[in-house]
Image (spheres, helix red, strand yellow):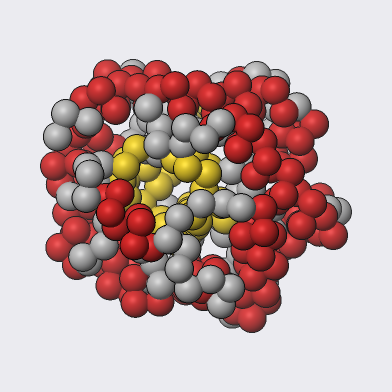
Length: 293
């Protein structure tokens, strides 16, 4: 997909993304503390079934499960030399699941460490890791990129720069995990993201993860007021209850999630999806309500 084709797509109404991957796979047996990417490659049927359910529910674009498939994150599991292999195989799983019925997004995530401070990583180190992963995702044939769950506007810039150094014309989405007033975990906020990220090459900006949709109306309104590109809302299904076994339970029903997502749509978000705790039924309810315009 080209950037022009993406703009034409957005002229036809909202773009619906998928929902959570990790929280759903944990419910099927994925342990806490493992490399999700490695586990998915060892248990592909669970992932393919989940993504097909999202497409059936109305998702128009789904995330390849390449979230942590960069050198720095894979290095935590001794897998840093398998970046190219992992990204190619993970994209192939999403293509198998989507069967041409949905776009496949190359998913890139934060390193988990602040940039250019003691104990963190340098900008150049992050840029190199993102560039390596972006090259593998491009070669694997993704339709667009989603740089998500970012903790820093600066690190967003590094990831976008990495993609743009390899392709001037593939669409790039970028979302940060923000608190209820729009602050990012390491640096920057919703306003800075809305103004700065399109200038360095993002085609859509917004938020994902964090908390439930009911807390982000003012954040989405602020981003909408500060940018001309599409705005993304991909929140959790509320705040989780942590159970005795360490797992998380999300109480927000699909019906309520859809109603709250409709409020974010009216606030200015035109790319909509779900993050932790959302299921294909959450996405189905959202599509049915928000697809009415």
